[in-house]
Amino acid sequence: MEKRLRLAPSPTGLLHIGTARTALFNWLYAKKTNGKFLIRIEDTDFLRSKSEYTKNILEGLKWLGLEWDEEPVQQSNRISIHKNHIKKLLEIGAAYRCFTSEEEINQLREEQKEKGLPPKHDNRHRNLSKQEIEEFISQGRTSVIRFKIDEKAEINWADQIRGEIKWHGKDLGGDLVLSRRATGYDIGDPLYNLAVVVDDNFMNITHVVRGEDHISNTAKQILIYRALEFKLPIFSHTPLILNSEGKKLSKRDCVTSIDEFREMGYLPEALANYMSFLGWSPKTCENEILSLNEISKIFDLSDINKAGAKFNWEKLNWINAQYIKKMESSKLSEIIKKYWDNLGWKSPSSDWDLKLTTLLKDSMIILKDAIDQSKPFFSLPQIQEEGQELLKNKESKESLKQILSYLRQENIDRLDQDKAKEIINKISKTHSIKKGIVMKALRVAFFGCLSGPDLIQSWELLSENKSDLLRIERCFISP
Ligand code: GLU
Image 1: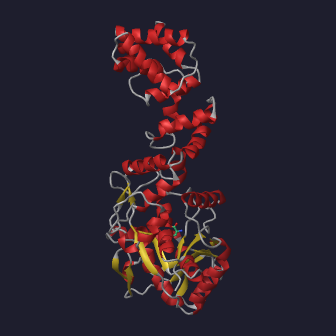
Image 2 (image 1 turned 90 degrees about the horizontal axis):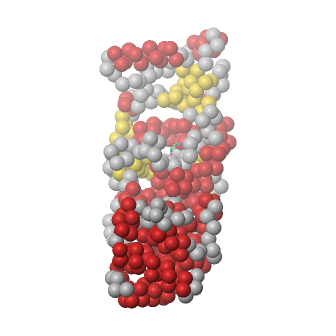
Image 3 (image 1 turned 135 degrees about the vertical axis):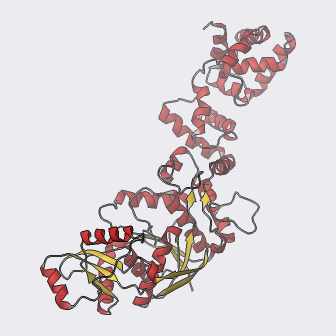
């Protein structure tokens, strides 16, 4: 039988790393089994749902390479169907109308709190007579529809990640609210636990893979499946993503939305690759740089860990750097060029762009590093303290003086790498200054400090945008 999996995001915020990872695990299993990966937008909370969030979620999934196989289902289009199922549950006596007011519920909570008991509805309206219901309605009271939860019910399922899970009806908080705000004999607004069962059944979902925060919902939903005589899917509950302190990753942990990762310059392939290992440990896999297709071949739900997965920036950075290194320079150059254009930085030629990209590529961790790393090629960096120290050295200054006069004498306004090497050797030999000193002095002239990219390649690039002479000259102007 075809395996059908789904992601059911609520469009109440931007695509979050946790949702993206749930999507990824669903997608990987669907691909592995030649099944289908589907989307259902759970947008029935009209106050909090926004179409721009739906757009953001779908775009983010696409960006990560997690394409879906059928037109997404929009839950809000199915409300009348959810209501029909609630009607059915009322008809078969599995649900009932409850008129407990908010004050009454608060009072009950207070009493339970005083006794040190967890909050639980006391099902006080389970057996109202027709007349009592009529009376409440004539008083103008609104109602909720509650699903009867048998205190003695035993609910167990073989979770693909966590093994056997057992729940008891008595631990589910009393009769479950299926819909709320019903006036008169209306059904009101159906809620998540009912809608999710009806829609998963409608979409023929065979495997439900979602976060462990839904475990108690699964127990409740299984009881609804039973009452509606629907076939149960196979359930799997994924571990939470934790921050470095071992707490659930939340909006307070600076970066959590996929957009933010994208803006910082993480590549989609790298982020998806990293996220796969966030809570999943394959039995045999030495290589950690793998495409989603490669991962899907070795992926299995049973290899997902039960324990929470700590978000590890170092590992993400390492993986991203590997992907940048692997990237074709021309493609990378196009991306970097956009940053320069946005900053108004003008480069002399596309060949120069490519050369600078190739020069920086190996030291980049995220795409945005290209900005800081290429900046010294567009504007004159100040000479830092270590640079000024070096220039106090006679030989350093002398070597720069000799290079300057040579460049002027020979009228060299553009040089390639061979010529650059030749000049350094020549000056070193002729004036008996160690090559290392000549090179350090040049580095200070070019970049103002002792670190930076390859000097010879840099010189070629700086000579092309005609700033090498200027950089050397300024070493002779006292600050
Ligand atoms: N809309 C729910 C959520 O975003 C879906 C949970 C589920 O997958 O059933 O948490």
